[in-house]
Structures are given as C-alpha cells and as structure tokens.
Length: 438
Image (tube, rainbow, N blue to C red; front, top):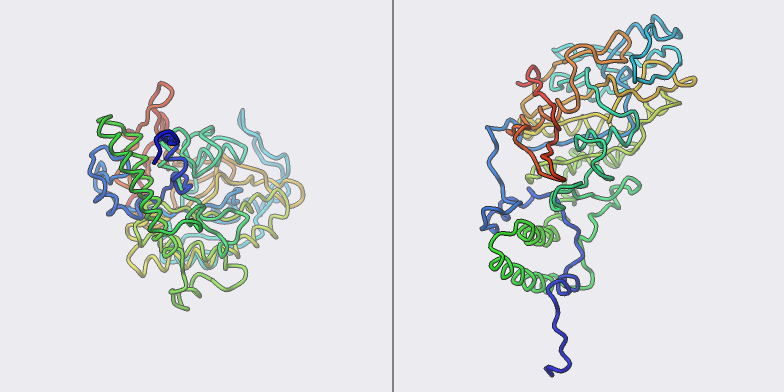
C-alpha cells in the first residue's frame, strides 16, 4: 500500500462504516447464558445479577390494552349503575378531578360468578373467565394523568415525562431499551425486528467485521481500565449479532401444532393477529426472555360507541389471552411467569354523549396471574358506582413495587443517578401489596 494515499481511519469512522446498522437491542435474557460466557468482566451491564431475595416470578408477560378498558364493563361489577341509570353522579368530583358531566350509564354486559372462587367477570370475557381461579383482580388501582400519554408513561416508566416511547430507555443506557417486533399498524404476519437482516453482507463476513471492531474496542478498554459505557457497547454488539440467528427461529411458529394454533385462535377472524402475539409471548418466555409486552392496538378509547367497540375489542383478545393462560399452565410456566393485563387507566361510570365513557385515572382494574400471586382473589374496591378507588387503594407505584418484589427485587434499592439525583421506578413512593402475594 502506498503510504501517500493511505488515510488512517479513526475508530469512530471504522464503527460507522463497518457496523451492521443495529440500534441497541434488548431481549437480553434470550441469550443470557451465552452473554455470561462471553462477558468476563464483572462490570458487564448485560451479565446476569443475583436478585435481592429469592424470586417468585422469573419473567413477565404484560398484556397491554392501550386506550383504557372500562372497569365497570369488564371486571368491576356495579349493580347501582343499573338501578340509578340516567341519574347524575350523586356526589361532586373531588378538587382537581374532572369527570364527564353525563348521567350514570349501566353496563350493557352481564356479570356472573366464575370458578370455585366465585369471581365476577363480565360476559365480554367468557374465555378468560374460565381461568377465574388463576386471576388476581385488583379493582382499586389509581394513577396520575388524565391524558393517554401521561398515563401510559406513568405505567411503563413510573414517570409521566420519561420519554416518547413506552419501550424506550429514557435516561437509562440505550442497551436497556426494548426491542419492537413490528409496529401497531403492521399485522404480525408481516412484522419484523428492524435491521435483523443484512442482505448485502454474508453472515461470515459480518462476523469478521464484528470481530475486528470488537478487537479495537477491547484494546481501548484495556487502556481505559474501567469504562462501563464501552463495555455495554461491546456486549450489545455481540448480542445484536447473535440475535440475527436466534430471533428468526424464535418468531417462526410454523412448527407449532394445529391444536396449539387453534388454542390461540390463529388462522381465525378476528383473533389471528393477537393470537400470534400471545403465542410468540409463550415462545419468548420458554427461551428465557424476562419481559415481554403484547400490545393490542389503540382501540379501547371509547368516548362513544362503547357497546360496539368494547365488544369488538374483547372478541379480538379474549380467546388468545385464555389460550396463553392455559398453555403456560399446562407447560408448567405459569408458576414462575407473571401475567399482567390492563390499560393505562379506566373509564367513568357516567356517560359521555349517548353511549361513551370518558377517561378515569381515579379508579380502575388490572389483573395478574401466576408468578407468585394468589389466584381467585379480588383485592380492593372502587365506590358504589366505580369512579374512585376507596378500599385498599393501589397506586401504579405500588403495582411496580409489587412486581419487582415478585421478581426478587427491592424497589428501594434500584436507583439510577441522572441530572444530579437518584431515580427509581417508584420515585419516592410505592409499597408492596402483600395481601395479593401467594
């Protein structure tokens, strides 16, 4: 090589030119054992760490219903809504709380007791009701924020201003963010993990490129002695490369039996898309992924057409969710898998317009199953009409503290310093809801 025509590459240029275009990816636990073997360094941010105490749950599947399902139409029966239909709400809303000025609107659906526990569930969810004895229903949740964006951020991050994406890492290092499979507007049959394939470069050549980059990284790390950020870059590159071979196999459901596909409602209308998501959740859980979120489309925001649209929504998710619970239980996974269902808030017991309900962060329902919670249990209550949580109230911070406890983690010991202060998921609040623990 003629030295007069050689322009040295900086390390930054080399990374920019040779990297495969991956964003930092999560699904960290998918390859936890391999990561442990490759780690070597004690300060590796991707290396598995021991919990604070023995966990009851080893993974979470969050079935997210964005938009705000109505608690008084799903899992929180209120007979007085029927008795007092079309009357105004009997007491004024507390200071700082807004409520649609409409009249009391009874639920169009019938509630019945299910299972040995006698838990009351709406006819909107006849399939999920078959698992009533596995459900721990919290009817006294409350949160902050009347708007969807605020409440969704609060649910996912503990803060109403943490960042633009529910699966983003906000101020945490980028390697901790989630990996999106497709998007809301993409059917799961067409959904892919972005940048998972490089059609221009064969896999063996990518491996050579990555090995060279990693050699430079490790040489720099030796000189720097301790650099957690660089260590994170090294491991996230390795993880991203391994995902190219692992993730496509994991998302391929062609080997599943017809009975399993039928269980989730796959190849049927209207359950096919959500059924595929729930089946992938089970497959991810089997392979050791620690947190899986299955998001329904933003369909639960019924300011009008409550009966028509809540019915449509429930038909899309009821059978797949019931199939997931049954499948996890039969495979012995439900015992240490915590399943969580719900939206960012609930709805008002009063009507908005003729047949809708407004946002309600002051009292709503979510349920959990497996992973160390009591089944067939109802915890807490809203008032007689379902507007405000009044008995054994559970704030979103309390829910977060409880979930972390089930994972063997003390929420008060999980802090991250940013902008001059220590942050944690539960901010300066949060108490473990011990009555729901098995």
